[in-house]
Length: 251
Ligand SMILES: [Zn+2]
Image (cartoon, rainbow, N blue to C red):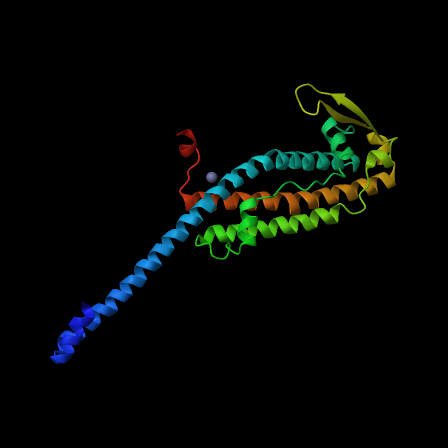
């Protein structure tokens, strides 16, 4: 119909009407593109929100999983510092506490705490991470991934040639199984230490200081940074999704 009208206007040499028809056609095409683009944008936004909501659920769970682990690592760090102070005569105290002795006995354990977020793995494998429009979330994801990767490298390094002190120095550390109720798996390992004999044994002291340095690297460069980056990612997701904890959860 529009074409017939344009043809008629050309025949009658009504150039103003021809120009007007042309503008209408161009505007119509432009609007068509705009609507298509807007619909595609809305679609992508909706899909992105689904991903971010799923990721938020995983981040909340992972934060919970790492909470006790990170807290235990901090406690061990403190106990190892206390043990160093006693064994290197930096304090008047001559006897190790139970926590300090057990921290010495376990100073060779550097587990990799979980850092798995399946939605991030999916975003990476499908190439959708770069397309995320939420800039702060995208940046936080990248930094979390880098931190987890670096942490894995540190854990690999500190686990090389580790020495279990209680096996190498059984005369200085005695281990025993203690039965505990209501705490899986129902047993735990307790340790007894001879601080005076430890101080007099340079081989033990060197090995313990080495273990303690490894533990410090493990805590400071592998565990803490990833936990911090996880908290930053959580904040970015909360801001993007408009989630306020305490208000949402109490509803
Ligand atoms: Zn949240």
